Amino acid sequence: MKRASIITLLLLGSLGALNSAWAVDYPLPPVGSRLIGQNQTYTIQEGDNKLQAIARRFNTAAQLILETNNTIAPVNPAPGTVITIPSQMLLPDTPREGIVVNLAELRLYYFPPGENIVQVFPLGIGQLGLETPVTTTRVSQKIPNPTWTPTPGIRARSLAQGIKLPPVVPAGPNNPLGRFALRLGVGNGEYLIHGTSAPDSVGLRVSSGCMRMNAPDIKALFEQARVGTRVQIINEPVKYAVEPDGRRYVEVHRPLAQQEGENPQTTPINHSTDFATFVTQPGSDKALVSKALARRAGIPVVVSAGNGPSANNTVLSVQNSRASAAVSEGEGEKVTQ
Image (cartoon, rainbow, N blue to C red; front, side, top):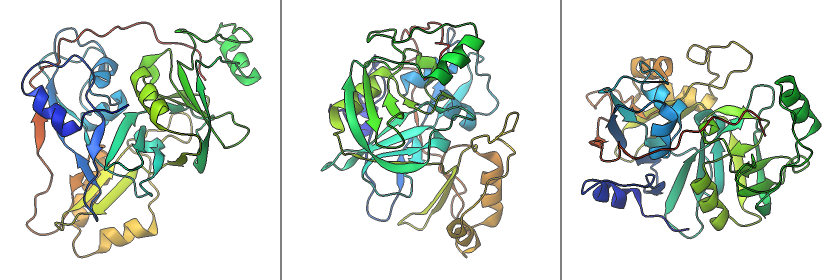
């Protein structure tokens, strides 16, 4: 499925209202660069009851919006509030091949072979105690219209919530796996990248280890990814880069909680030796790095020493051209998969 580039849609957006989700295609940056995208602003409107609905319009996750705008309410945000949509990011420090998932930022990156683009999608991942594994593997099977056979563990947890699951859920709109699934060659094949019948769960830690996507996103990925596609899953809350122009960036996300009740805003983050070297190099401003690590805003922040800018303030003002788009808000699915 070929999608228009983000630059094209930004131009179209300035000409009028758009009724579909923002494109997820970003031109790959030049050699030596990892910075992609451009942040946007949006003004909360009457009727914007949940951040999940706004997130779906911009093909991002509500949790990422909350990271960047940490003073807004996730339910019934105040109309008139101007928020930043986190659509600028650093590419993970991984090979630009196949599928790359960064659990800490709730994003999936897909690098179509032979194309100079990367596609970025929001992602739901495994809940505490049922984590999505950090691994490098391959797509082992493509499954259109999957049925769902709940595992004994899922059946027991659902029953504890008063939900008795059938032995098999047939393919269809109410199937928790959605319309498409990619099986991964890790474990016993129990880990999938799939759709969901609960769109509000995308961008959350709610599954039993699988990764779930919005319906249009998994359809696009399913149509492009082949059996054998490389899949790398990482868990890196801190990304950093030195760009070709000399600017130094740090992008910090809230780390995934390791135990119940942990506060991801204050939980210490373990840093790699390479990041420690980055911080101590003459070009880095340690105070700005410390501020970024404490704020955990989920967007790239300039931490260059000297007279360089302290942040990248270039944003696209959406001017609410998409604000009144109707979004269906059904009840969230209670079972996990």
